[in-house]
Amino acid sequence: MTARNPENDLAFAHRLADAAGAAILPHFRRRTPVENKAEQGFDPVTIADRSAEQVMRGIINIERPDDGVLGEEFPQRESRNGWSWTLDPIDGTRGFIAGTPAWTVLIALTKENVPVLGVIDQPHTGERFSGHPEGAELLTLNGCHAMQVSEVTKLGEAILTTTDPYLFQGREAGKFTAIREAVRLTRYGMDAYGYGLLAAGCIDLVIESGLSPYDIHALIPVVKGAGGMISNWQGEADFSTGALVAAATPQLHAQAIEKLNAA
Image (cartoon, rainbow, N blue to C red; front, side, top):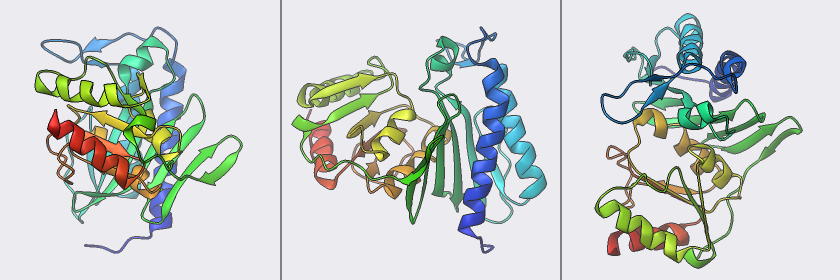
């Protein structure tokens, strides 16, 4: 395992986000043609998704040739040094093609498959949420400031978000309904942007399912860096099932886990 400079890695992640945003924005709200990757259902991809991942991969190939790359749109490149970049060029492509501003670029650096640095970037609004072991920051056009999650500890006082009210199927649907009925307010359509808002202290709870590693890796350092909790639905750090619970406080996280498993 080679030694790394965390400040250099964070600066590099910001450069990747800048490059991805520059590739994406010319296509936003331009009625960009959409392809469906799914044999059944709808899994959209656009030239903006592919162009953004290609430009980020190009920079990594030149400047970090020994680092691995795991991306949504192109084959994985194995790491030669234990470090890898996880890329989701547009998380929330459905929102992107609909012209809504909640889609984001997700960038994570992993050490032996454990996320240590994450960036959730919204190029259209100019918001960039970043997280690392020393903390979390929100960079906007007005400057950069540290992020801290809210102090909400009770489900009945919490603001909840998830991507889609129809995201959950079978038993999961009943479990989510139990949480939705217990919280103060629920909002939909956020995708990864919701985790940035949780880190910024606006949202208190995020519950999702069916996610892939490129959807997840960037979220973990951002939520944890801001003081939040993130786990699977059993309260564990195994994210292989793609089911997540992110909460502002340990008390709220414990209540959400209990409610999910009691339903």
